[in-house]
Image (cartoon, rainbow, N blue to C red; front, side):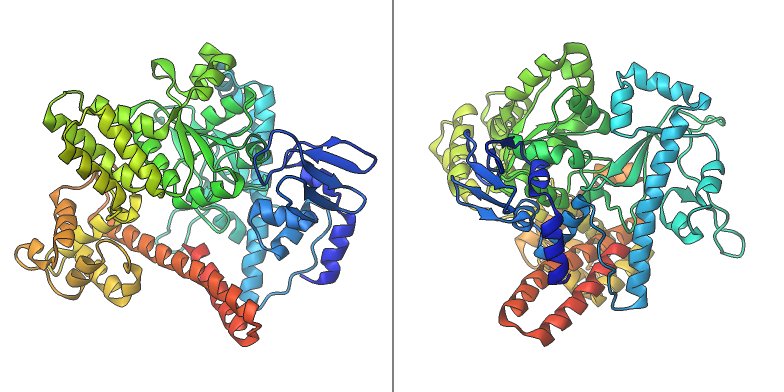
Length: 599
């Protein structure tokens, strides 16, 4: 992006309006505005914005800069991207982008078209919700306490029970390629192998748009009105858009576009489990609420949350059932490992946030949020509930429940404090047991991916189970072929040694004999002990299909690792002024980004 264009944007952009989207400003002079600094904690506003000269300055922490600096620091993005963001906020058209190849230009054009078609689909669903056919949908929303205000705010809509109407409406404005790539339509393969006519994928469902950070719709969640179809077959309660060029479900947090400013203002985020919970909490007046959407909490979402929570404080309020508790513990573990201060909300009578607010009111819910428990206290209480007996065996089991959580705490001091607190509350009086607990807390001997709470460990177990099958088994053949060709995919995994051994040679009669050390033997034994419940949930999918998914996961992790390495190498090449190396690295990054989009 040229210097001339950035200067034009800087001159035309209203720094007060743009900064005001992130923090509350009040006028304190002819051209001066003041607010609470977003870069450090403070109770008295020392952050000043000068409208005439277009700069900001904090008298507390001494951060300063122009509108681009502000966006770069808050959004954690480089200068060129900050210029684009400010230009879009100011309504300044971006200059025509130059592409290095026709393929890159086509991909960029398709992404623009996909954003446009999702906006068009959102408008289509909004209009359909007002139709006579959508009477049941409106009744359902009214019964859930969803009034016209949140319907409009969250752009809730309805997908008619029609296979062709939406397709016919949109094909007047979008190409067949865009329709197929959008994920809004499906088609059946014809006898000659070619794709058949498109038909609507979402039908007879209440539609919730999923927006990106800029508030643009990029996907949908559809809530079914019926439990079964006309033939008596079960219908999935919720249906989500498939992943595509503009949507990766594990990279998006529902309502982040609306909540981001309030998260910065209040200094923490409230994370709930579903879209209806999020909408209810938001419309009740708590604006810093976000939600996971049809997927488990991921590392990408942790990184995304880090960008918008400078104080790294998160309150979790997931459903109180077993699945909700498990999800909360997985999310909490990942957040703690990244240095977040995590708290847990436990609502009375096992209610979810949506129902709690409707039955008990906002004041009661706000009190519950304010009274949230420290994550570590919650875990200790969970250990006591799971193993309530006061016997030595129960205490050891409770301790073993906590050990993996203790290992994930990055601060040695906090690990030791947690270990000491847990030992005291569990009634572990033996000096030997207490010392073991502290030693385990200080020695984070297991990597993140070896822990059973990490979804990636299931990827390893699937591959290990396949690699000990007979040599001609399709699942084993697939795993061996891909792993032998791409050893870098499993490099760094806890199971890398045993994966390499089994991929290069047939498993012995006793598979455990292939393990060269105790750690690998334990990993393999656990993998072969029994399929995880996640496997059972995917039945009747074959092991070969699961292996294919697992290999895709490994490949994506490998690409993402290289992507992080390239950022460092590119920065170093820029610092040294090595234009030749920079060009090579940028070319590799472009190819890598394309491959990741295709995943």
